[in-house]
Amino acid sequence: MTWKDYWNRNKPLCLIVILLAAMVIYQQFLITDLQERMMNIEAREYDNQLNDIRWEAETALSQNEEQQKDIIQLQGHATKQEWRLMEMEWDTYGK
Image 1 (cartoon, rainbow, N blue to C red):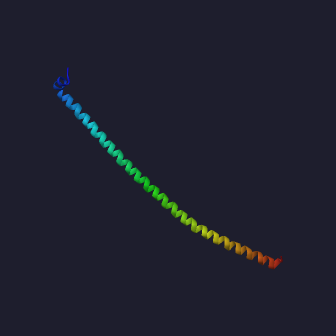
Image 2 (cartoon, one colour):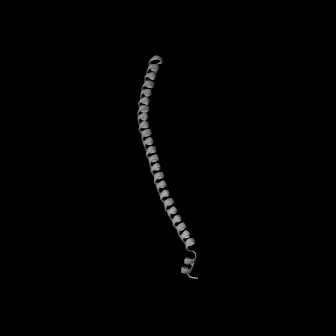
Image 3 (cartoon, helix red, strand yellow):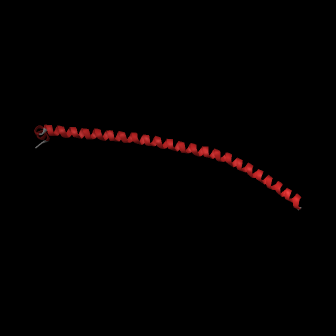
């Protein structure tokens, strides 16, 4: 039996098989396209999250630098106050 004989005897079955194969190929194309779009969306969200984290880190760092300046200033003020207190003790109790 040759392909022509098989085709002539089972033409509807062969057409259905060809149609189903075409549908499977089309569905696979749609799945691949959807996967690619989802990966692009996930990558974009990941980039946005990274940018948010970077911005928060830079903001926290700038706040930390300001707080560090305040701490240094307060340490200097505390040192001056301790020195004045020691001078007052020396004046009161002697050296």
